[in-house]
Image (cartoon, rainbow, N blue to C red; front, side, top):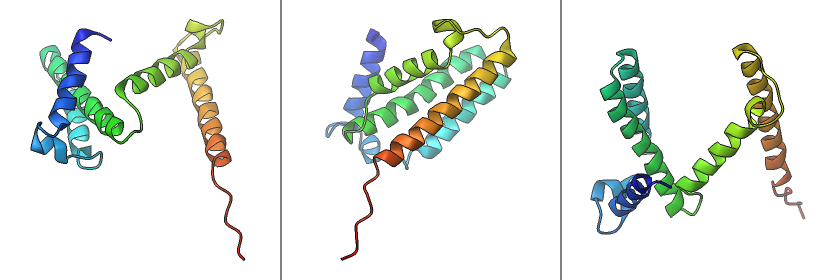
Length: 141
């Protein structure tokens, strides 16, 4: 991980620590939903304006939302930023077999068709995995 990413993760952890910022400590995934949507909309706005300086700043603000949610999840024992990055890396490789394996996609349309099929297969597999792990209903005595 780069020094700057490591520093960012440490800053977020400090903001959420007992000696950090009261506002940051009070937040939950639910309370920062509006921040997430606002920042995503601001990214869209500067892209439409072709404002590259603004884009750099707004992408940082959007990244903060990702880091914030990762910190909350880490504190709750669910996952870390590194887990999110690892999951994304695996997904990108899976969904681009024409780049990372011996698949072929000659044009954008073929890539999108392939992506959609892979995504549907992943969704199907997730549903089945979720159903396999559900506890059996309690029997009535």
